[in-house]
Amino acid sequence: MNSDLHAVLSGIQALCAKTIALKQIMHLEASVPLTNQQVASLQAAITHYGFPAVYFDFTVQRPVAAANMAAVEAHIHGQLTSANAQSVLHGLANVLYWGYAQIGYRDVRVNNFLAGATNAHAAVFQNLTAGRVVPTLRQIQDIHMPQFSGISFISKILAFLDPSNYCVLDQQLARLANGHGVRALNQLTQGQQIRVSANNQIAYDSWRQECAEISATYFGGAYRVIDVERGFFHLVQTGQLHLAQTIYANA
Image (cartoon, rainbow, N blue to C red; front, side, top):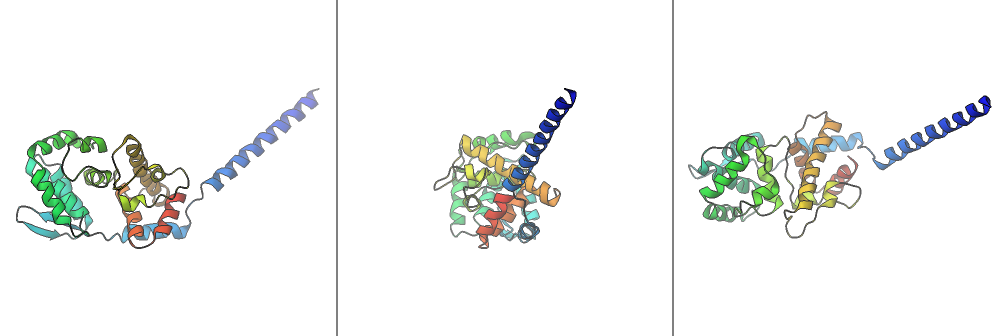
């Protein structure tokens, strides 16, 4: 009797071991890791990110070509977190100035913002960001500032406030979605613009978390969330959309 029971238990243990092994194999097949070449491609894209490092000096009324993006980040972050309402408005205008750097109607967008933005807008923004708090997309939208209604430019504000944990989500980056797998950008609802909604807030937060996880998994956390996003943006802008989609889907 004891020998029969032992045989049954041994059989159950063997079956459990096979089941666990099968699940592990299925998991590995379901989440194909990046190849060394794909990791190198993303790292190269992060390194060679080439969006114009520019902002506008509203005090002396002249454009500034900064030495690098770190200088742009420092300048705009300082303006956005200033106790001076006018500096805050200039920081928000610079988010537009930088973001539209490659588009001919940039000055129109910036001037429209400056014409419609008020110290009251700045005060609400300052209250939201007091204590280095990063607001939600909806909180920024609810200020009702001109030119900041969709996620594309609201997310740029958040990215300048905290580039370590926040990044941009615009129409170029939304092209990473290919409908395969449970990835944040596959859940995005979009039309002519990426609107602020409960669904898209979740998608945005998941997207920046994915960028953080990619940095941690493949680069030992060496890159900030914004750096990983910029790597994907560089791939898309340089005609490597398929590679970018493949890396995003498999990472």
